[in-house]
Length: 189
Image (tube, rainbow, N blue to C red; front, side):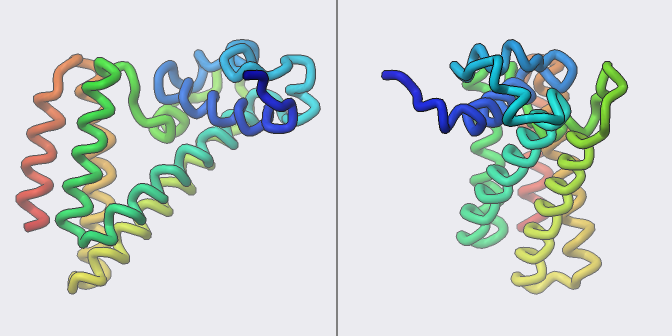
């Protein structure tokens, strides 16, 4: 089935988000993104005049909004159940990819562009982290936590999960992730 050219920009952004999760910011090239997205390379700079930095910023924003939507969905079950489900989804993602896929937002946050380009992807990562924090804090407040405590719990949860994902990818072992999950779930009960 041939893809319509009109959806090529969205395929490029989605593919770039997937590549960020696996290869990181600097290893994600426009040429490889367009090839994997089955998009015409020649029109890439027409759709993305900001080049690679624009594509990566939009990919980071897309990944951030996907995770935010996932949090929104799981938190409807309540904080404890929702966070447990969210953590289980991350665990499954790590295992299913044999620890090759991480968080594209984290990749954009921690890597400096090798070409000295703009910080658009990092800024998009900051926006995503802030949105996730806000969503989690609101859920904690909704279950009776004071706003300051809710904010602290949200920050700790995000930082713990991101760190556990990174450690598990580096060690190719789920043990660190499982230890973090156990502590987080105990804390939330």
